[in-house]
Image (cartoon, rainbow, N blue to C red):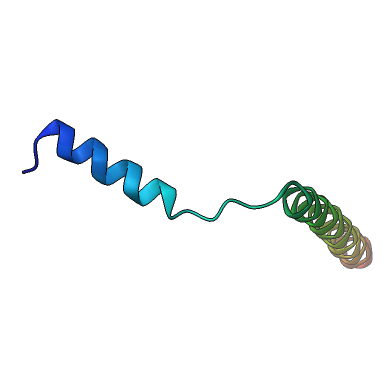
Length: 63
């Protein structure tokens, strides 16, 4: 196990290799996440409405 000073030096060395996203990339990916979440919400709402309608129709025929 490395001593604490060596560990900190290694951490700093590894962190310096990280390529951080630009502000534009962060904004674009955030917008894409919100759009995908909205599309999924609409899709599952439509599926829910279709299943509920089908069940009501089926239960109405036999109930």
